[in-house]
Amino acid sequence: MILAVMFLGAAVHRTGNGGADRRCVAGTAAGVLVCAVASAYRGGDGGRFTRQGWILAFLLAVFTFGAGLAARHLRVPRPLTAPGTISYLVYLVHPVLPAAADGTVGRWRHDAPALEAAFLAVLLPLCALTHRYVEVPGQAWGRRLARRVQPGSRRGGQPMW
Image (tube, rainbow, N blue to C red; front, side):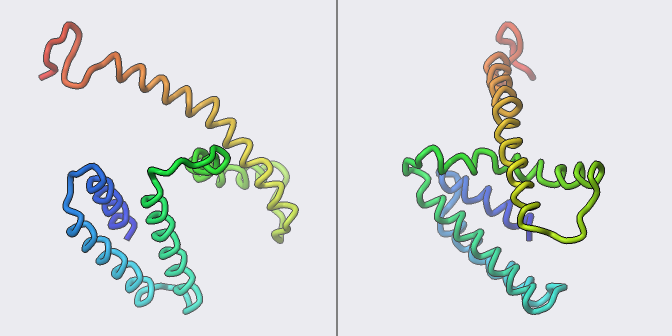
């Protein structure tokens, strides 16, 4: 299902750029949604509550994607874009912090709201700093490199092939 959703995202992107038929992609989207819900309902390995939770989370993610797609041309205030700016870094860094804590101070037996608040108090600024000092310079370097190396050509304008 993960691959189906990923390829569906690519098809939706192509539709937005005029590269795919909207009706075909809408039908594909409906098929992927039905298959995702049906596979979770029928083949889920958890109890009823777990399957329903997964289905609800999946449908909410689809709704969020659709709302974002519908509002993609609207101007969004900068503070509301900050979570999206660091979201991939949150995805990458969030498992590292508990691993580091386990190796240094040990694992707590129970979750506590204060520990979760401390986790977020470390995670979010760390991700913002990583974005500012690693990701943004890396993107700038990539753009400079891309401008220097034109696709399909080499030094002196000779074709690459």
